[in-house]
Image (cartoon, rainbow, N blue to C red; front, side, top):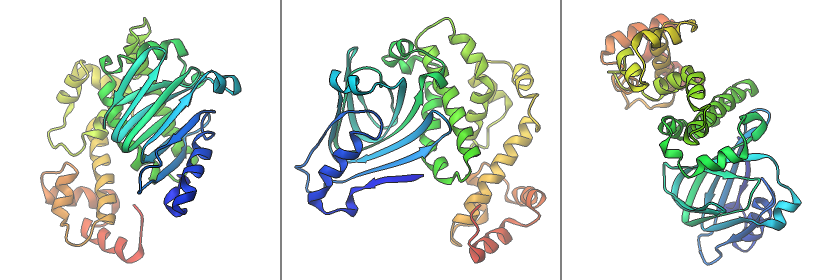
Length: 321
């Protein structure tokens, strides 16, 4: 993560100009208007590189309006799409196809090759995935056709859940290869949502191609549910259990083994981060284990140390799981 700006580090009088200068150029040329009536005026921008042609941009703060008109398009109009996930507050977007309003947990598409205007009201925050159309593999026309009916895609809720975890995941990533993997996974999910929402002939093909990724993301987002099993996973994706196992057959671990590994990895991180007031049993249940003794045996088998010993050693040495 790279912090581009935290205007709270500046004098109040200098904040509007700093925000305007950065936001007007950080992505594409655009006109920026800051609500200067707020006594608590502030803005924060963070950037994550996700490999060639893709990155994340976190923007949070008080009221602001961003507009790309014909003049800004003439300056530069990169072949790029922004998929925005509303974190807090309310935002609106208007373009040639109409108006839309975004509330927390909702997704929106902004075609940066065309005119648009976005506004935040009060205090708000959003996380945007910006990707080149060449990397995404869909046309700007297809993206615009999908924009007004994103929620109709069978992959929409999965993409929402994926975005909800992106900020935390991005802050933990240290290697460029890991960042590129997150970028690739996000790109494939965005492509699947656009293709299916646009009702193009490639929609079913895209769903089939992204099935393994969607299965993986679904399991990751439901690890804490002790009732998670093959039958439920298959039912949620409208496939048979046999087909589920066939899709998973290329994985080095069985589905059950992979779920256990992911739960143990989550528990390992939580044990390193939590204080002594949080018991091992609480962490085990948070991570989908119903039996603390079973969790302890699994943990020792995987890491050669008990959960309690791992937590103590992490606290002493300052280990980051």
